[in-house]
Image (cartoon, rainbow, N blue to C red; front, top):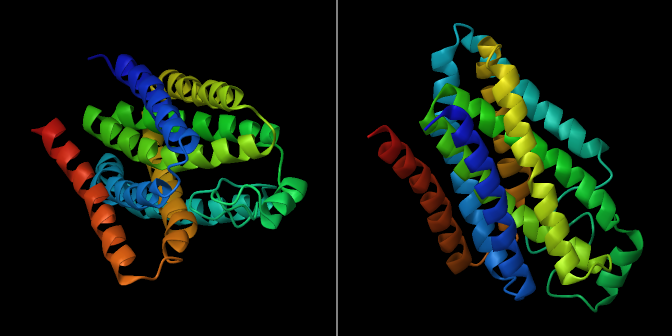
Length: 265
């Protein structure tokens, strides 16, 4: 399959799949599944970083030290950006910025979140940019090889599902109807395709930059996993929950390894 077709299909199907899955989870109030999705997403993202993305970045460059510096720089960059943003996505059962617990739509804390939280329109603006960057990362990965592209796309999709769940909750909380929340999230997901197209037409003539783009992609996945997702998992301290989280993280890593093995034969 042509590289451009791989990029377009992965961005389109990935965005559609993440939004539909998030809608099914959110609109049917199956909120307890969110933490399970987060655990799997952690494993998928870290597996993609250390089993596929970074090894390929190192293989494509003669400047390994510069590439690792980009990873370090990227982690610090995402930390600063998250500090500067007026809002951030909710990934788990509790949203520390919006002070919103998904199971508590009528409580005082929910009312406080409604008064002080960011509007649904701002969430959508941020999501448009976020998905656009995801498309660039997917496109740059496919520019390396089909294997790297598929693994990267799967990891991003795994991360997008709990993120989209958070978007749905915030939109519903801001007064949007269920149908409107679904349509807005779906439209925002299509910006991934635009990012993929940009990566294909720009990076095709700038292949020397691909290892550094991959390094930046790796740093974003590492940061989101370690800084945003894992702290939420630590809020459940029961032995049973911990064991289940470890199993799901391992399953996420295993799915990346299995995908890599199937694609590369």
